[in-house]
Image 1 (spheres, rainbow, N blue to C red):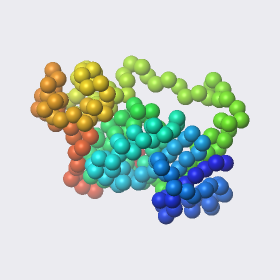
Image 2 (cartoon, one colour; image 1 turned 90 degrees about the vertical axis):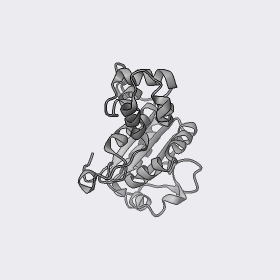
Image 3 (cartoon, rainbow, N blue to C red; image 1 turned 30 degrees about the horizontal axis):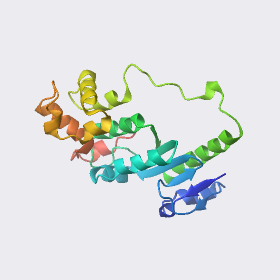
Length: 219
């Protein structure tokens, strides 16, 4: 099993859990991602790190490099709740949908042990890929073509319909471009006023002071 763990993950608890489970791995600096198995790259983030990475502008750069470096890529979000941080729940949902749109699979885990179990499962799966092709019945089903993932992501913003989302994507070309657009640029799109522009902008950048009761929600 060819599993590589980045040196910065040594104290995360995940390598210890892999070792206890008898999963072999090597520790070495990885230029991209936290775990690598063949052509699979895995980025692991605690929920708080996920929130901070988005707010500080690091997340999309990390995702971009992940997509360039691997044919199959995953982001592990580890913690009791994906909402445990300063971002609004709507923003977290939009973020997960945006990752899906970019071909990055999100795995939700509760603890380092849970993360280790998922990583070991991916490693075993990758080992099986080398010896045989996947049968047709095991292939990943096609996503529902009726409402594309980028439209679903933008429709998570309050007041934004799939029609408006479609117009935004047509104008800006991609979901990331919409999320990075200024409110003034968003308002140039017919049907996007002050409130909708603010909602779209907050989908990618806003924080919440709603307190512990919201943060205790789990996925």
